[in-house]
Length: 368
Image (cartoon, rainbow, N blue to C red; front, top):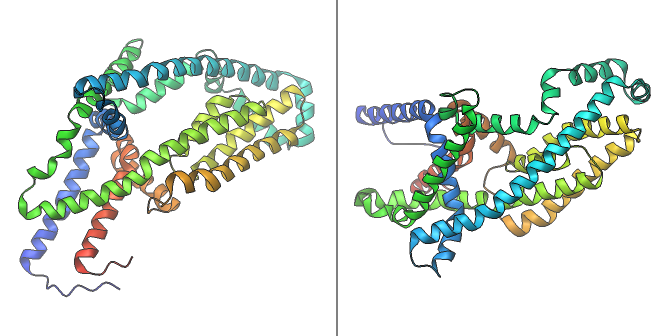
């Protein structure tokens, strides 16, 4: 039980009220400005992740701007190539899955096989879902374009809401260009940003520096290592799904890898994976239970690799937040700040945790 013997004087109450109002106004401003802050937040996160690579390049190229441009160019060329290859493969997978879905709806033999495994009411719901225009549009040649447009609309709402029609493609490109500009400028001035301590008044310098160091240490455990783990997990799932010949193997695998940025959230990928396995088995005449077992085996093997090899070797100590706390922070910050809250949920939660630890250390009540 925490006890505070400091008397609640009028001056202290006023400071508490003004502090609470400042926090409330800050949250409101961030919510209002979230549309324009999202590109900056994305660029700031990328700058934080890429700065070590720029520093490495800077050992050989003394000009900071040149080192930044060369590093980004060296990363973007293979990234664009891989992205284009992935787009072609995913587009092909979407088309093939659409053909399987059409066969599922129109072939009477498939309905007979489904009756052996699936209750009639559930099968009817699956058919109703498969007949929806949105589902058919997704599983078509233009399906991937729709996915990319939806992603751009989420990431760049400030620009997207100003235009419509074919101009949205140009808006997406403009948004990416804005993020790249932010990224170049942030990386170029990263050393200047790192010397922010000299601009803090001496009375607050030690306290603010201690808080920022604690915040940086906590977030550093998560972002760089968890991003690497998520990328590896996405590749493992994609490879596993390709081996068992699951429709949309690459797309689903990479989406599950992205979900893995929040520990254990990849379990949410079980539902679409089992659904796609069932559709494929019924449409091609395969064994339904074998298809389901293949999906379960892929998830089990990847989970063992993640918990037994990747997390202990790459991440070591945890973020300091349990999975349920991470999910709760995503929900709260997402509700308060929209998409910006989802991008910044974990850093903001770590910031609150760092403030709490600093406060308890000052009072001498922090138990390690």
